[in-house]
Length: 307
Image (cartoon, rainbow, N blue to C red; front, side, top):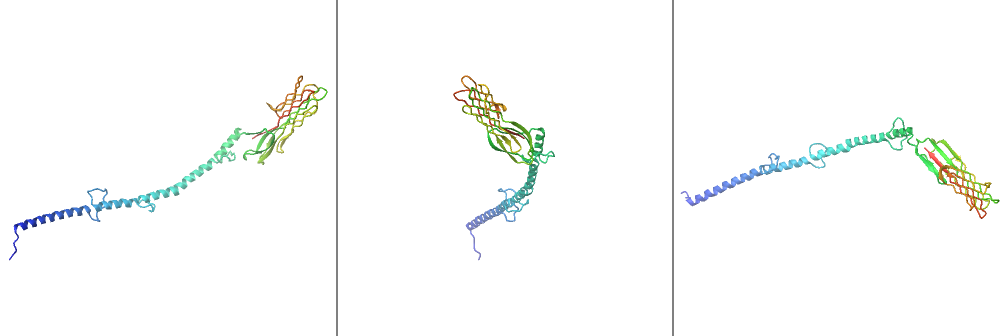
């Protein structure tokens, strides 16, 4: 005999079936939202795509970024960066370096010899400057002693040189009421000298002669100035006798109008000789002075090198 289901049990079963149906619907929704690994990668991550679709989209974009070990190419972003880096560090950098080297070679350097064919820009500029006479320089040696003139570069093939010896010293007064003679100026000489085969030359600047000190004392000679062995000027002679008067004699002038030589001693009644002007000037002679006298010192020599 079949079992009987009462009305209360049927209502319970209906409720269970309805709940099961709801669960199935919910499970279906969850499954849909999760999706499957075969889902197409989402082009944009959002709530309308399945989880699998979104995950695949994210993974796809991550694969496009790539890794820093990717070979140069266009497959991933890192591959493209690698390609750009390779291009910059190989072809482009070497090309730019080549252009820079070419520019540098064309410009040249300040030590390039002057060249009318324009081997470099510097060489051509130096050639034009030399032709225009704008490149002349002057070395002046105005202190007594020994120095070295060094040729700046091979473009200097000749120099104009002026040499002046040291001036002679003036004499002191002499007995008998006579003043002293003045020292003579150093000799001035000039010449154009070929220096094409030279790199440097010893320069000597003459020392001045000293004035005589004490009655009857004579002045000493100035010494010679020279430009190596190529040009030499002797120094002025020191005074060795009286002036023939009670006054001192004026020193001979040298090179320039600068007062460099010493004056001779003056007395209360008579004036001493005035020292000459300029480099190499002679010292003035002393005026007669029974109580003592001295002659003026000569002026130092000078060497000028124009190139």
